[in-house]
Image (cartoon, rainbow, N blue to C red; front, side):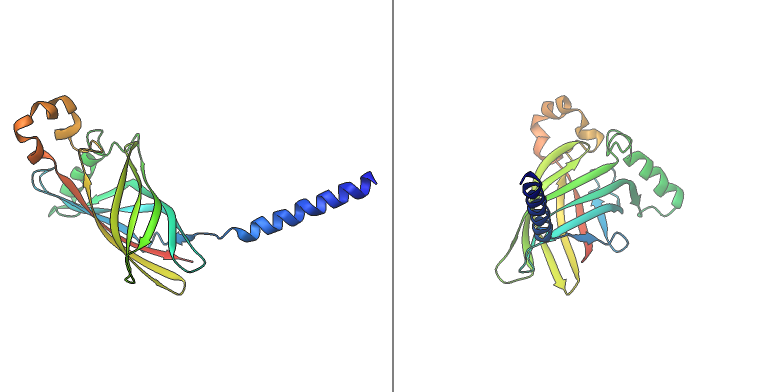
Amino acid sequence: MIYKTAIALLFTMMLLSVTCTGKLQPGWQLDVQKSKVTWSTAKNMMGGHYGYFLFQSGNLEYSDAGEPVKGTFLMDMNSIRTTDNPTEAGNRKKEGEMRLPQFFDTDKHPVAIMEVKTIARIGTSKNYQVSGDLTIKGITQQITFTATIDTKSRTSHITAAIDISNRLWEIGDKFHDQARLDSLTAVKETLVTYIHVSLDITMKK
């Protein structure tokens, strides 16, 4: 009887395992070769520059109805490049500066993480409201933005434009010293600047 009970229990556990496994839907994976983040800054921040950086990995889960639900994206901050300088040496110099602690501090924080928590279609369009947590330099802030998601068969092309506050993530020596910022009460609001970010992402099933 004990033997039969053990066999029945083992069979039940195996059945449950298969059933649970069947419910898990693997997320769509980021095509890192076809995806990038372009960025630019205003002239009052870092002199005004632009360039790009690359993703390390990413995944996006879709519902049975084909709607994107949530996902996680890892960005390689050491891949940051500037492309506005007329010389290669000038671009490399600026890239080195942007890896310093007062900017992205890539030695301590080589990866930025975007954890997408909710994605909601806007009407019947291809536009979606995306919300989640963005972690840069170990600092996590919630962001919400609009993305265009065009899904066809086994690929999704995603584009979006986002303004990232350098003050919230302590990016840039002008805002690295909070005491100095607080003392500039008369011009405090005019000093807050943004890094303009554009996403061009390809997901594959």
